[in-house]
Length: 265
Image (cartoon, rainbow, N blue to C red; front, side, top):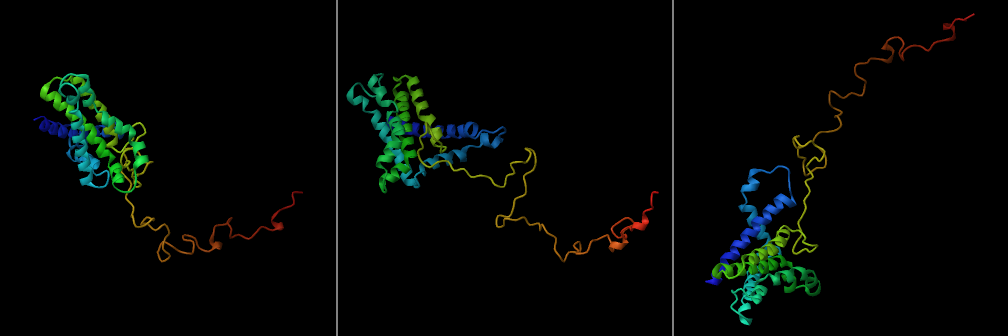
């Protein structure tokens, strides 16, 4: 019964973390002045993409899914060790709080850079560290689900402890599930930035977008030079005749001579 409750809470906490991660990215990481109604209400597809991105962060969905569930199960088994050294694992005892805390999650989180540098090599270990986001998520959500299962079935834990465990787990995962660093630590592939080159950064906010250019050419379709065969193009100046036809005083007149000037005396 407790294991079934653990699986239920594992699904619940995973979905809840994905939803919180989506809204954290929408409202804080990529905050905007105006939001569409669909961005706030229609969240099923983006939430599924976020979770699938966690499982495929190492490149293989099967490996990522297996590591996620396997380390979540390990966190649940770790929580049962409290009953092996003292009172039953679900009772209000200091040892049980120790084993139900997300200790493995915190150790793996802050030890990941050192573990990856020391043990990452081509082969299974490289696949393991490439899928580190799925491993970390399994350890964290598994520990939180185990404490929720113990509290929900026996109600002997302090709920404040369960709530604080959830905050410790969800806060870093909101960063990692969006491809961001947490305290300078990156786990899994980083967020890819793809600039929108077609966007006019000097346009007014309410102005319509500039027309898209042909991606196969670096030039616009409009010819900047007129065609020589065009009727509007002529080698001769238009609207003017010979130079001598210009009115008197223009360039067509003869230059003045000395006889044109009278002696002022």
